[in-house]
Image 1 (tube, rainbow, N blue to C red):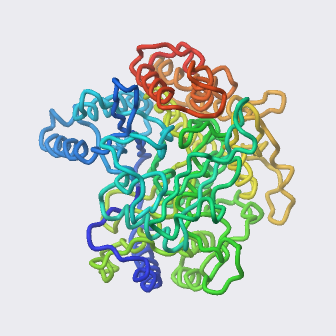
Image 2 (cartoon, rainbow, N blue to C red):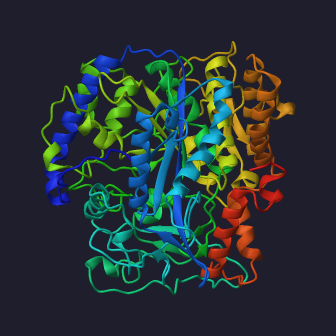
Length: 634
């Protein structure tokens, strides 16, 4: 979730006075870090996954599955175990995990205790470690609590007792009609971030996701469950001021977005140029993997007409003013900014010869003064544009105690802005000048899956794709505008089977002209996800799985290890060709087949309870769901 500092946070009215101070010193810190680490080299790939869990508390008597708000207590116990394990080599193997807080007070983030290497045998440890993390988390939970890997909680924000302990909605930070501030992580950064997004924007965030129109869903759908309050000026936003759109599910707080869970993979590259290459080559895969991992069809107790979380989160942290959103002429704001600070990337950054200017075809908004400062200090054009683009944003949380710091020793001001640009990819410098950690890239688009087996499969697949990219020097470049188009369709209901995506036709180096200034439209075409993943022999396109298998063929892998890896890749293959459902399609089907469902798009407490119970049983291997997992063992 980004930088977690301790101190006294500033209200937005005060923080905005220091925005330029943070930007100025953030750039100085980046330049100092760049100078010290630009030539650093590591021996090999290191990588790790981040799994986010929701902790659910069952009320079996009343058939309710509630979100448990006591995760902080669980985190404290897990931290103690981590500390003890660090002192005892024998115990370290049993507690090979690391735990972190997330935005929601019901959320846990778990990572491997140490990064994996790029060796085939390391891939076989991934699922084991994910299972271990789940077991460790359960160890400190009550008998009626369970960690589930759900992307969006189906009844978050519904009226009634959906939280444990119960809290009524509303509060000074979010001012939400649906959720209390008590749902936000207690660390002072999170409620401050929530409140300052609202204050900077000049209104509450307005999240609207289209309703799924079933047989008995009213047309137009006007949500009858939106409550009315008269505590804050924003209480009139939803109905009187039109924030809640017809035929949409309306949400009004950061928790609906940043309270979602995902699966992220971080790679440490050998050097900065390799990190930039991975960043660029993986960027076009963001929308493809979003559609393939789709797992978020339900919001605030309603079936939606989308399968993914992405736009919900983008709207939940959209701090842009009306001027920045283009609703009013620029007067007090400096830029017209096309996207939320949570969205797809806006430019490629590698100096690889295959990256042509035509691929960066979106007009990039960037701070020209910061760009000049970076250029004057030796930062090349593409990277200078990238950093100065991130820095058009304002810092949202500034701590009094960290305002004036040593720019030679700290990167806090740089990270303040870097960590609150939440995009499909993130390019990450080393944490400090002396850190043993190198240049890294985060792959951030994937949705969390229901089981450890599925999450391991997608993590392993993405890691193998990066290895194949570097081994074969592949070229996935398409214009950034086409990646944006792909992001939009990736979230549509059943996009994995029903949509086509722009993708490059020739992904291997060839002798054709790569001169700048050419029309690039013939280099890519619309493909199905089945074609992108599994290949299109009639077109001579190998598919990403073909690429991965060719890479594995170059390695000296024993038969047993290859067979184990193959079962994970087989899941990817079958999800892509439609043999197996996505989690979103499976959840949608579960709801629509439930005896209590009235074909009105409503997901009741009982349906939600049964859904979460079923997901728990699936993950424990207690029930078989061949339409989701085939014959794979979890």
